[in-house]
Image 1: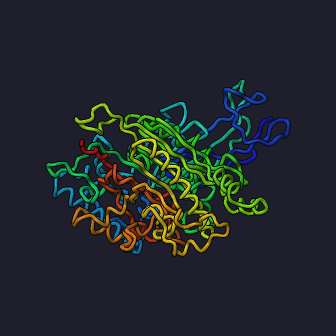
Image 2: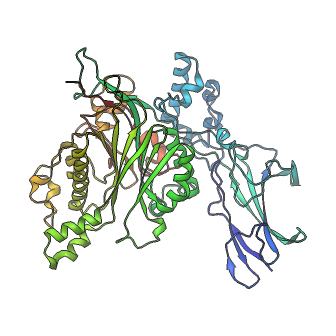
Image 3: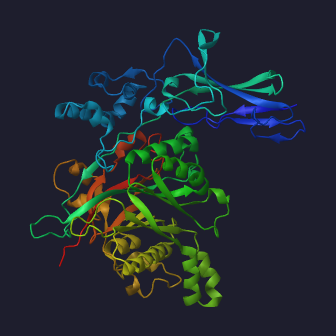
Length: 602
């Protein structure tokens, strides 16, 4: 007879909005052991499995800490209550917790006071405001009550009231499927999962049910929303018309984000992050909330596992109006499961753009061509071992559906080329990093030569500001005396005068270095490196903090209107390291709003 050997959860800390999928180990009649589900619609040997979820509710409501959501709250900030800040953000587990978080926490008070003083519309200012194009003040947090409305936990939407009483506790049935997604109503309560074998003919349970209890449900941590900071009017290369006004129309936003592949998100690497916050069921929901909250017109993601792209990101972002394109890394070096190899994914809003063309760059193929042409046959194997690293780039050409050209050119198509890449990570392969970036730029030059088209180059370049790859991108060349050029065992970087390109690329975030006083710009300048005009960091772990991610744009055809504000170490709270319960990657997202320039009529 079918029997249940074991049930358990990958993480016993349930979070609002994150699916709970129990592991159920079965023994079939033939003694074979399986984890396959046996639903009522497809019984096995005359039996199927029935699942139920219960909320165990005592008379005492338990509040949880807003900073450490796995801890019970012991104090509440009355200033939050008075300012009508969401009550969940007012709780802390200890006086030290409240003191350590004060620099971050006081921002909530300041924003609440500012909102009331300016326009009296507290909710709009605290939680974000959007205009029709998806730009403006940003909100990356979704309240539990808002997100729970769409949760489905079984075929029966309504369940009996009190089911069982034991030792002063009441069990409420909340779900009738194997998977359960906690809602805001579950916060502070223990959940119970029950699995029992049922006779398919009589519909009666056979044997005793197998059960497990979770920890108390905690709310999904919500970081303070990051806002767009205006920087328009600062581009020295902006063409002016005879009246002295900027001659440009059309605006759109671009997001670049390394989301940290699940295969790399291990407790060994990120021991400072709670295990429940590293689990993929939690991280994927938190990442989705963040990405959707930015409402970017174009989204460039790196380290997207192929299975997660197919099963989660593509279908979920499709619900929000995005079309998806993907390029998986090659697998000549990678020796793991082919389903878990990561790649680059580019999404765009169907109502704003249409897909014109897609180019895939495989640096392994370029390495083969390079070694065939330049390396003696006896040394080719050694050369390929150094150059072949499976990295890729995805280049997409889109056509804008919104007006870019104004009255002078009403019928002209507005095309846009976006490159999304993840450059090799190894710090001892400086020559390979630079060669990969040069190869990508030469490919983009060919596209630029065939069409007058604005370009964006986004991604994780695994190169700090001032490095040779960054210099090539930002300056169009590399100083022949640059220290990175010393490492070139294959001679692929010589002669050094070939390390150039003709694309007028500028780093979007360098606009913060030219922004005027006010509008939060002073705070952003403190988060920039004054020497390189790049963020102090886009990657922040216990072992490394620095900028690795960039959004470059062609300054002759695009200008920056606004930028997503940068984080600082205080924003990351006490750990000052990523990932964390609030931020589910070790990188931070970069977002820029651009305006297309129209060329003056001759």
